[in-house]
Image 1 (cartoon, rainbow, N blue to C red):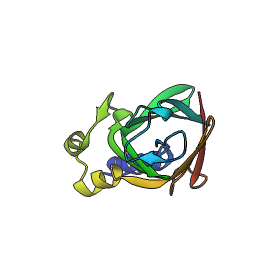
Image 2 (cartoon, helix red, strand yellow):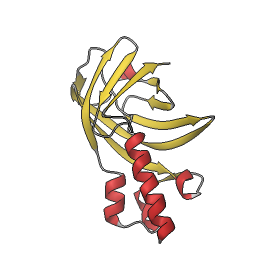
Image 3 (cartoon, rainbow, N blue to C red):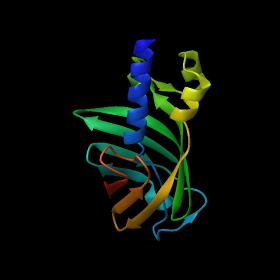
Image 4 (tube, rainbow, N blue to C red):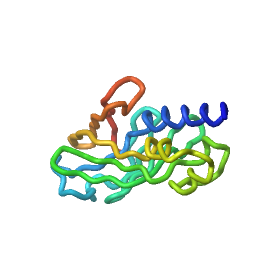
Length: 150
């Protein structure tokens, strides 16, 4: 049980740290979905954010690249909603993506799963090849992350 709580604590920290996952339009306004203008790879320090039109994947580069989470996003104006759908099993000594059902099978309670996969909201702006995301707990240092298009 203690090991499970330690891993859950690490997952929550990684989710907060890795919540560098959003999309927006080139003109800074959203249409309720994602945006083809942001499809591609964005980097902020060791965080790597891969965006498609409506999905995201977050990876962390620490010499080796570790997958963290993936899910869906939407935008409206300068607001965004990010909804994780999978957590990578690396943190549970499992190789592969874990969905809500998989997490339940690993013994996490519904309350723990709901916290890990809860939608996040915040704001964003895009200027050239710079994406700025403001969302509570987005990094360990604060609530704003700055990404550069790769």
